[in-house]
Image (cartoon, rainbow, N blue to C red; front, side):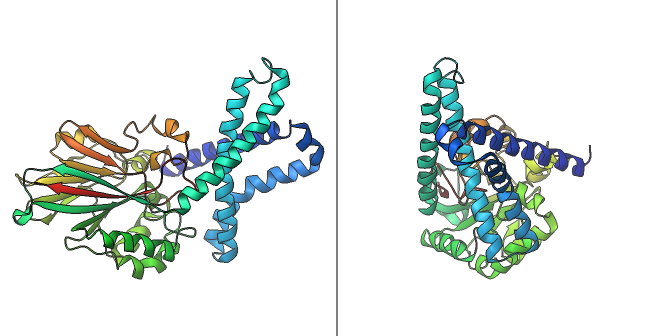
Length: 374
């Protein structure tokens, strides 16, 4: 199957799940007599169509007619996506507790009503948590040596910013100010800087160029750079002053090597070679402290075996909305936080921005600071 066929299959699965969630949630909601009496059948059909179309319509408008209307529609649709996921989760829990109404027939309706109330409450919490912005998460990693005889080197990681129609100039400027306050020696951007449209991020290039560090700003591609058009996104990243490592390595300073790979998840989805790290590690001088950048936390042990001392990833968002973390952990067992793997430290960022719903439940977004200490 070609890349176009793979993408069509992926979109088909996504839209099927999207449809099934709507059918399930609305059917359960209207099994509550008070809601059933309040909304006639025709109103329910119209509501289903409106809610189903909300996010896809927002994305289409953002692409074809960007502007204030598109932003409002997309923001409403994205928020509904998060509410829907939490509603389905809560309603499924209610169904399981009542045996789908068979073990506790009299309690099925109150349980479903309570589930909807819980979903609304959690949605408000998740929206507020996102509005608080990212927190700074700090790690210290011991290394054998550092450039110029330094005792320490400060590195800041941004990941999964998902810039575009929903997260724009003001949001980005605040994040860059937060990075500047940390006074990093080196900044890395581990993929998904672009969300869905490269042209929506191009106007942010002047702001991106204010993101600076003495040893440079480096990055790798994420799966969304592939979805949005790889070459267009690479042009935006380059114009923004980000040096992108594509299955290659470079010295940020003598003895400090950054290696980076194009996103492994997108490459596998599109049928491209995503099995080897050979090119990203070939010919690295020894001794060197190697920091490996990979958007997806995959081939982790392989990176450690090739001599990486630190690996920085993102992609998972830490699940973003609990309990999605349990599904995300199936393909990505290194889900979020810090891990020690075969002598290498792996840090998986929960992401600096959000994808889809502007919501995070229980865990805020992150700016990661790593202090390399001799």
